[in-house]
Length: 479
Image (cartoon, rainbow, N blue to C red; front, side, top):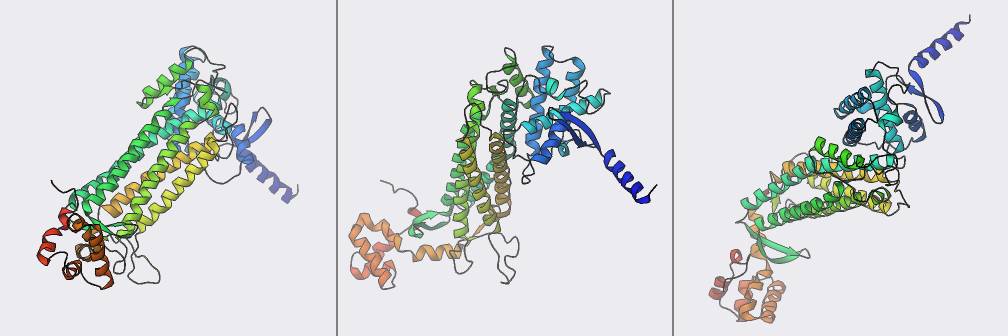
C-alpha cells in the first residue's frame, strides 16, 4: 500500500478518535470526545464565531442551580425518576463547583440564549449518563430536553439565571467593595476634619471648608449610590422561572413556579420570589435595565469623586497640589521622576465602560418585541461585567490611592490665605457691594484683602483680623 496513503489514513484515525458524533433535530454533529456538551453546542461553536465575550462562571453556576432546583421539583412530582434526578442534582453541584467551566465555550452573541441553555442541558445530560453507566451522547437514560430541561424554556431559564448571578455578584462582590471604599473615605474624613482649605466652584476660588468635609461628600455620594442599587435589586429577585416560552407556564403544572423558586431561595439563602407576571418578565427584562441604571449612577458618582481627587492632587508643583497620592509606579517613559494618578486614570476608564454598558442595556431593553426580548443575554452580560469592573476598581482605588493619600498642608494654607473669597464673610458687616469692591481692588492691585479693606476705609486692620477666621466659615454662624 502507498506510504502516503497510510499516513493519510493514520491522520484520519487520529482526528476521528478525538471526536464523537451526536445528533440534534437538524442532524449529526461532530463534538470533541473530551467535552460533555453535545450537538447543539457543537453546532453553535461553528455558527457564532463572533468576538470572545463569554458568560462568566457566576452565570454558568447560576444556570446549573436553576437546573438543580427544577430537577428537584420535577422529581418530587414524579416527572423524572429517582436515579435521573439524583444524577442531575450531582452534576449540577459539580458544575457549580467549577469542575466543567471549560465545557461552556459559547459567546453571548447568539440571541435569547437557546444555545447556552442547551449547552447546560447537554453537559448535565452527558455527565449524568456517564454517572449512571450509559453511553455519552446516547441521551439515554438522561435526555437533555426531556429530563434536564423538563418544565423549562430558554426564555424563563436564561433570565432567571442572569438575575440570580446579578444578585449574588451585587451582594457578595459589589456591596463589600463599595462599603470598603466608603469606609476609606470616612476614615480620611475623620483624619482631615481639622484641616481648613479653600473650596472651589466653577474651578474658581470659593469659600472655605474642611478637607474632612470634602471627603464626607465622597462617602455620601457612595452611600446614595448604594441605596439606589439596593432599590433596583428588588426587581431582580422576581424570577420568571416557570413561565416557560412566553410566560404562560405551558408544560408546567400548578405551583411549579412557586416551588422551584422556593428551592432556589433555600439553596442561595437569598429572598427570591416568583415573578407576579411572567409574561412581562420574558417579554421585557426591565430588571436588568433598572440595575444597570443604578450601576450607572454609581459610575457617575465614582467618576466625579475620582476627578475631584485628580484635580486636588494635580501638580505636584504647578497644579492645585493639595493632596499627595501614593507613588505606586513611574509615570513616564520619557519624563524622569514623573508619577501619575494611575488609579484615578483606571477608574475613569472603568466608569466610562460601565456607562457604555448601560447605554447598550437601555437600547436593547427598548427593543424587545412582543412576547420576548431576545437580547437578555447581552443585558445580563453587561450588568455582570459592570458589577465586576466596579467591584474590582473600588477596592483597588481604596487600597492603592485613598488609604495612602495625604494632605499637603503648606499648599492648602497658601491657597486659603491667598483667596479673595474670604471677603464673603464680611458681607453682613459692610454689605455685598463694598465687599465686592474690596475683592476686586485686591485683585487688580495685587494686594491682600487686609490691605485693600484698610485703604478703602471700610474696616480697620484690627476689625478685619477679628472677622476673618476661616475655621469658623465652614459652618453656619451662631445667633
